[in-house]
Image (cartoon, rainbow, N blue to C red; front, side, top):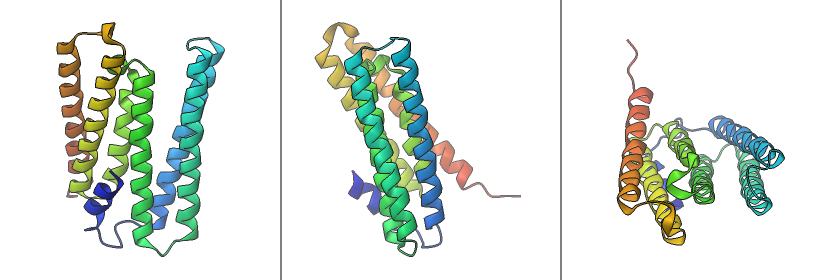
Length: 192
């Protein structure tokens, strides 16, 4: 997955992504992780989720925050390396997709409100100004969402109907591409 995103971003010029962009993206991701940590605290305090689910979410969140911090540090330390900046963005995008997938599974598969988290990597890649990278990310999000919801459906068979599963996967996968194309149109909009 990481190699695919890197290959799609190779066409970018050195001016299109610099270390300041990577720093901003890493900071936003860190805030995203903190917001999710706050939601875990609320869920735990109100006993909405069992203790083992709280522990799992903390593991995911701490890992997410750790990767965001490492990306931020490396972006600052290696300002002049454009290839490294692209690799760091790709790492964050892959982490976003994995984080969203883990939470969709933990939150009941196709019934999960965590589906919205797949829009974070798509939005992140829009900053790269590469339509192919944007579409590749939408495809990766679709694949990850389809696998995650299928896995949950197989593991917990009585939680829905097959037709519901397939139509949900199809609809949301299409939405990933719609949002990616809309972001592409906004980013490449010509100013009058």
